[in-house]
Image (cartoon, rainbow, N blue to C red; front, side, top):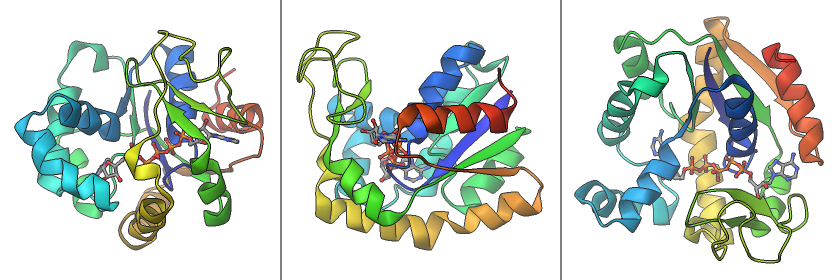
Length: 211
Ligand code: AP5
């Protein structure tokens, strides 16, 4: 299955993508995570992307299209994949089609801006393995320590409230129009993001027809 997880920053795309990835044994590919890794490693791509991420702006299309092209050519994508955070613009969606990728479903998670702002303040991420937690909704067993790899959790720089505001503006202006794009193609399915993570998972799996 080839799935796009779509939604505003903090809607829960990454959280649900991780669950579906395990269930279907297909990779979940987050352009955001790939870019953050490049920034951490100080690569040329990371250096050029850093200022965009820190402002809450989109990284230029040609950069993210190149990332996806490379990643989808890897062997583990042969039986399907989940795209988390790509595409975010119409040119990115068109580039995906031009690569010959046939998407089965675009799963859109709807969450209000107000709820997103509250949620982001509690997000904690693992710099070691990339796992995501929430101080209230998805706490770790040991406070501040990743359940999976034992690393000290951190707060993403772009989860600063001012940057979250700008990421939401970017989403509404540049990415949200893709909903109509995929709806026209008959690929869009929407679920309402719930207060409890497990409730969103149940809706997501049902929408994707996964038992
Ligand atoms: P990216 O890393 O993709 O960030 P994002 O889309 O802004 O999404 P997030 O990772 O912030 O949130 P999410 O929806 O995955 O939510 P999560 O599951 O973590 O991109 C970062 C930046 O990279 C962009 O701003 C841009 O600069 C650049 N970039 C990336 N892709 C690009 C592209 N294609 N083109 C151009 N630029 C690109 O959940 C959030 C929190 O809420 C967590 O703490 C979680 O535990 C909690 N939570 C989740 N679900 C629930 C629930 N139902 N109830 C309660 N809490 C919940």
